[in-house]
Length: 284
Length: 230
Image (cartoon, rainbow over all chains, first blue to last red):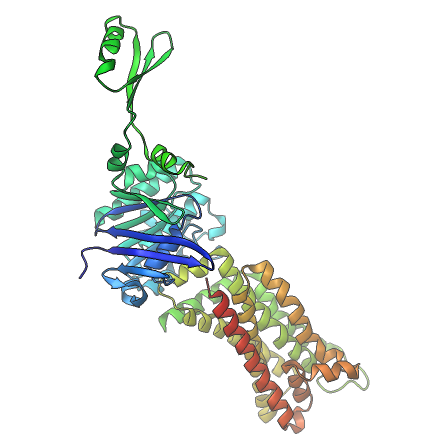
């Protein structure tokens, strides 16, 4: 039995002539929140489809729960929960009917339907057709569907894309609750703040290659070459100092004269790391 | 089996709320009932409207419904959700195709009753309708699988549906059209339904109908191999 819930080794994949994945290595331990970050079209959804056995990679090893992804049977797939980027909900059916269908498919107890709707705050809307729900409510319903069978691993593909901050925060709370229950979370996003706050480990994916892998803090520290201290003076002007001993006397003088309004250090975040590595922003 | 039953049940709920699909199942049987019972013309062949509309029904309803359901599920991403949740392509296709088939057979039963067919005539009528519906379901599935979305599916379905449904009627008025139409299963079914009183299956009909179902199966498998379900 593998120590990893997900294990990808040297995964390569081509669509026609185009090589979309060029040797991907990922290992995710049970209970970990893993974030796969990359711009649109980087290959994030393709990786999920390979892990869940929907497509066979051109080359390399893909395992889920220690089983080759191409050999996953119904029982193992019933241990997974899925929230896709386009949600994939039946618009004409009610929230309850949407969940009833997937409860039957995933082998979840029917009592879980009301529990899941309660958990995501949709009990009052359970009889409403999905077409009448707001985007945030639809996202919460998709998450409820993914959690129906208390999965061992949740695949969340851009779960907060296009949502307002309060709904996104609600989704984050639910994700952390699932992690606390013991579920492994596989999250794809291009939201750096989301990845920094939620993920134990992340991989930065660009043009089919993982360009960085590790914890968000580790990655930021690795690229913390040009540390700066930004000082705002009482007169509103801003000064930038190198974050080393050579700046100490100058900052001390400003402090002594009581002329500093605010002072803070400036470390690179994931966004700046990605931009410096690829020359492009994640949202592109 | 439970996956097939779950998707089948979902289709029933969904169709009841989808007027555009629902109307396709009900329109021809209802129009036939009305016309068969209200329009009586001199020298009009027996069961003229029932026989004519039955062929139109099996050339239209199963074809358009199957293509519409599959292409809509592809476009909205619900099909991908199913595929990623332990539903196999064969389970989905059996559930969807089976659902359309049974619903259309229900419509054919109404048409059969409207024609007053009983006993062996009713059995032959229903068998011919079942065969035609099956071929149309395969063809609709091929179009649905091949299409990337509903718009593409509609643009392919409409001309195919018009050819299959209207050729038998047009062939009544033009012998050249009749010569072409006889290669289609809808024309063969139309011919056989019109001779239902002294029904006999000749070799030509059997060969053409067998060739039609084999060709639609090949079309479906080619579309599936080329595009897959998601």
